[in-house]
Length: 210
Image (cartoon, rainbow, N blue to C red):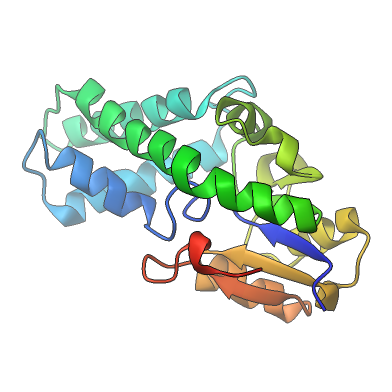
C-alpha cells in the first residue's frame, strides 16, 4: 500500500520524460547547424562543469539556470569552431516549454497527488531547487526536498532515496518513486525496496492514476 511519494524533478516534472539533451538539441536546431555528437559533448561538458563547481547560486531561478547552461554550452561550441549568437532564442524556447508544461500538466497532477500523499522531491540539482519550486508555484506541494548539492549524495546512489524515505517517515515498500531515468531513479529506488513508476513521453506523469 502506497503511503508516500518520492518524485524527481528534471525530466519528470519539467518535461514528462523528455531528456534535456533532446530539448536543447531541438532549440539549437532553430538557430544553428550543429552536429549531434558535438552538441552532446557540449551538454555533457556543461553538466560536469556545474557538478564540480558551485556556479549555480541558491537564488538562481530555473530561467537563470538554463541561461547559465546555455552560456557554458555555447562557450564550449565556440572553442570547437561553432559560433552561436542567438542564445536568447534557445533560452526562450526551452524555458517557455517548461513554463507551459508545469502550469498546464504537472501542477494539476501534483496538486492532486499532494492532497492524497505526502511528497518529497528527490533530485540531482544545484542547491537552488527551493527557488525553482517557488518560481513555478510548486513549493507548497512538497513536504521537503532532498537535493544532491545540499545533501552531498547524487543519484544513482541509493542513499539519496533512503534520505527521502526517512523524511517521509515510512518504510521503503510504503513509498513509490516517480522518475524518468531507469538508471538514476527506477533501479536504485527499487534496490532499497521502493515501488517505482517510470515517466516516459508515452507514459507521462498525467497518465498515472495514483
